[in-house]
Length: 419
Image (cartoon, rainbow, N blue to C red; front, side, top):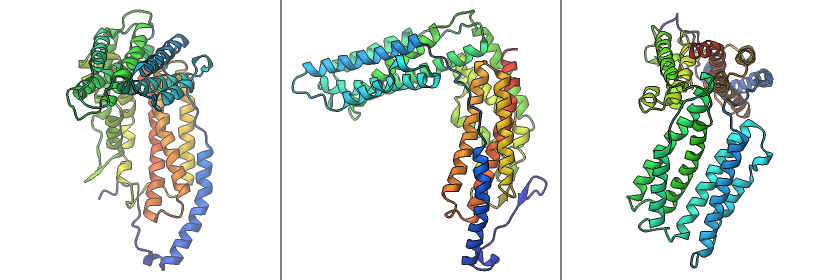
């Protein structure tokens, strides 16, 4: 075991080592009450919010809303004219989703994004109700369902990914979202095709997939088409190569093992990335260029911290182990404060840059996850054993440290993209 790499090692023995079970646990609870104040103080340190990187216009919000509303109206009409078919509860649920986000009342950017998701869900629910209107609940798919799938494929084939814009960072964010939606639509269309050729799948579910995917295509197409400015396709490809080269430099000579058989936090963050981002090279080869660059920028930001994070065991390695990274909860306050100050400084540094906001959003998610874990420690102050308590505290500490390191890399990543 490497004494150089290990920050602190504490071998936690049985309760007998500490002089008896009941007395030991009472002392641990008293000690944790002292730590509770420190944890609450850490939670009181606010993380600055950032405006959403994705812009949704009022016109598109209205368009998506009306498309969903018309879909529900048509389904209602189909049910009214079908023989011996009641409306059931699906249309009510669809209408509730729609009514939750009246477009004329939505000005907040986050709510506009949430509204589009609600409209897609409303269309999916309305689509599922059409199975009953066409007598399509079981058995072979109806001609109406087959026609809807054909229409979906036609709409999918008509999408033309295009990457126009005066700001490359804005193109990466706006068209990256369009690419991601388009990728989802392709996947969903393939899923629907598999369902329709296999009788064991529910036709109602296939209807939901088909109709929701058509709504997704509507949103994706707008994000591609509303851009003004020069074609940035070649610039995006060149940027992808610059980011790829930087990632190689970031990872070069980084130790992915904290010690034999134990991953470092650098490796842990790499695994997190694979869970949260797509394979950038695959997206590039599929022609989803903006999405490839967006995810490559996130990877560049994260790998820029690996020379720091290789010094710690991965969070995944901490649970219930003997590793000790912190001596007390005071260190959480310092680390949370550092992360908060770094986020605030970077919010100012990137300003209105949409890629900067996008990367900030990723970092804030990591810090928020640390906050949630702190709250769990408070909620379960008496249920954790000593090892779990200490490893939980260390995990929080490491998430704050990862956040602070990553957020400081953002300005350099934005500069590299716009070079």
